[in-house]
Length: 469
Image 1 (spheres, helix red, strand yellow):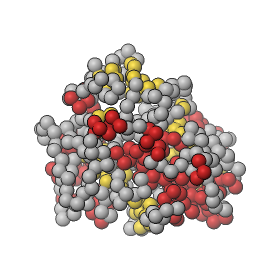
Image 2 (cartoon, helix red, strand yellow):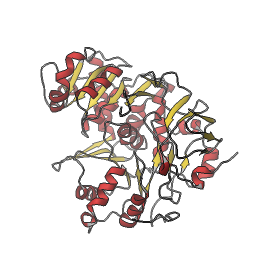
Image 3 (tube, rainbow, N blue to C red):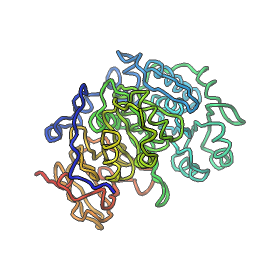
Image 4 (cartoon, rainbow, N blue to C red):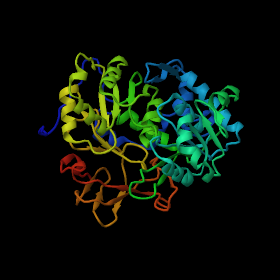
């Protein structure tokens, strides 16, 4: 068992750009959501804020039009590049197709897809149309799918012929609100063809005025502790996606970014679509299942600079040993981060020793929609620590089973090894989720329930426990 040292000191490689956030204390003191919002363009003519515009159209109308937005790698060796200009055209056509079907702003458009190019077009096209986008985990069975489509009131579902036949067709009669099923790779009775819809649809050339507080994304919790909870996020949340991509993931304009998260969960949208695209980078999408040798090949061949993956995947790489890594050049990698469950210290130490870079842990969840606590590029790493809060809050409260104290800048856990519920309150400018579709989430703003985890995620160290007046 590797022994955790006090910290891992990081050295910047030759030619690497300096971190976007170089001085944590100064950046935290000066940070404001108004300035973060000013980094985005907003719809022309001051007509609001739309996620799809910030992720695609503003780049397509400028110097990044011909830059690759999405590089999709098929499991059989296919390679498809979609540039920002082309992505704008495709999403406009999907939005036009939704309009032709009578889909209205606020209607729910669901996807049940793996990592396919159609997923990204459907997500951004729905947002462009001001519909609410909701991804589903493709490994779910019929009943978990029915529950989530029932709670959200799905009007449109985009999926594959195989998934439709196996998981949706048997229960479709129980979902009268599901009016349209769009198949990306074929046709079946009672469904529509994605290719035909896009071919025949007029492009929605302009994005309609969009109130920043208009609902945009619907994400469900896992449901492991009961009925899945639906968290609804508004278009203003794109400010958080953009700024956390730049600060927490240290995205620079010329980066090649790879987020391995499944598209059925919140990470697959927040950091598998919106954060990289709003920052104008090229993102890698791998359509194949996990394979250590394939992953190292992708990192090397595509010259990935920023890599965002999960502890489970990191542990599988550790188990695969160093053989798949032999003779690989991963010198392009500048920043690696982990998302999901707590990242064990051994994984951080292994990555630093074997990959030459440490993974950076952090914390957030479905209800927040974006990273809240993170190890940053400018910081040395203490394995097992999540490091520091990114934003400024005014207070916190407890449900009584654990005590949480929040100062203006940092918080401490007076009982750090017990489970509890923390309510975080900000000044109203933070783009957290705004609504809940379940009784457990209704009526929470400006308080938001955040489940605290046990022990190792909140280690006793001065990084987490320091207080400032």
